[in-house]
Amino acid sequence: MRLSVIGCGYLGAVHAVSMAQLGHDVVGIDVDAARIEDLAAGRAPFFEPRLPELLAEALESGRLTFSTDLADAAGADVHFVCVGTPQRKGEYAADLRYVDAAVAGLAPHLKPGNIVVGKSTVPVGTAARLAEQLAETAPEAVLVWNPEFLREGHAVQDTLAPDRFVYGVPAGDTAAAAVAALDEVYATPLSTGTPRMVVDYATAELVKTAANSFLATKISFINAMAEVCEPSGADVTALADAIGMDERIGRSFLNAGVGFGGGCLPKDIRAFMARAGELGADQALTFLREVDAINMRRRSKVVEMTREICGGSLLGKRVTILGAAFKPESDDVRDSPALSAAAQMQLQGATVTVTDPQALHNAKGRFPELNYEPVTENALLGAHAVVLLTEWKEYRSLGPAATGPLVTDKNIIDGRNVLDPAAWRAAGWNYRSMGRP
Ligand code: NAD
Image 1 (cartoon, rainbow, N blue to C red):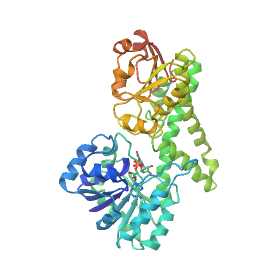
Image 2: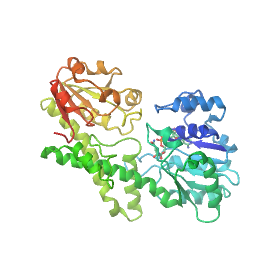
Image 3: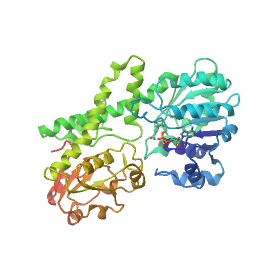
Image 4: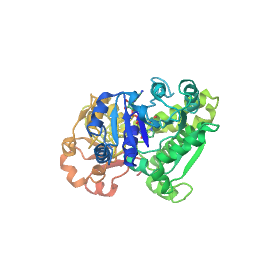
């Protein structure tokens, strides 16, 4: 099929490349000329496993092209809208100006029978509003909302073989043709049994925000348990293992630590609260305020722990932060707990050096006042405290014996509970983690 993908960020670039991999002819479009130049030259604009190889293959096959001009979408039958929906400045609500601009800009290029597929995460009610607009500007096109559930770090695999597809379709007889077109786009994953649900617009939009709210709640739940484990001497990891064996609970997303971040969960739960308020259902989501508050407390907690381990003040102390990305296998630093804690430590007078295998270029752009060092051993030199905040495998496998001679004081805070406390303590380290004795 002939597809266009509008917006080539973390979601759209992976979507465009993956659709070409499935055998479709794809044009990726973005307003960011530098990004399009990179993609067209085969340079992945961000770190994502498998993306460079699949991008090269797709360009080589001739099935994938890139453009900054929306008019180049005109040859496609199905158009995916993958632009950003960040948090509005100074508010909780989502900023929909990019989605609005993409749909409005696309409308003049749509032909009868074209399908516009929204993939961005939007507040419930957005698809209905956009469908009304399209009814005026491109009456023979059909809008479907098909939220995306990919995880950064696993984005290619999640796009090619997702857990499920959700299609939010309009009421009436245009829905059948839209479902058939999208089924054709996703024929390969559907043929291997990937479940697919066809629902109304509002349900599709809510599936995405509900899923992210549940995941955020699970993380904040275990972090709340960590807050109780800390004064009581209990071990939150053992607690998570034990409750996770109950299949009604499940072990995943129960890792206590410095909390969640990134370009999705924090802004999505806030936009959800804002939207519920507009709908008069704000009481339903007051618990998300607590989920957010617990999450933010973990960042302050790790700063407090670092101050304590340094003897009560960070003034003049050298702190090494292991990790800048909001999660491993990604270079995304949007709302990264690691950088947020690092910046707070710097404000309290520490000299903070951040290291990360992939995310330093992005981190420098956001927090130019911090020091950055790509080589872990160099970053550790002379540290009074080492703080692990992103669980990259190179940090999980750090050896206490080899690390000891590099630092000034053997103080380590394991903000992701991934190191072996016994091994570090046996090597003479003052080891602390979050919610473990
Ligand atoms: P991003 O900021 O990485 O990418 C957005 C891209 O859209 C940018 O390259 C930007 O230049 C481009 N853009 C903005 N306006 C445009 C326009 N009018 N025309 C063409 N391009 C335009 O954001 P992202 O992480 O890819 O997220 C995109 C959407 O997907 C968001 O709604 C997000 O919540 C959702 N989502 C993201 C993920 C994820 O893990 N990143 C997962 C699921 C859903």
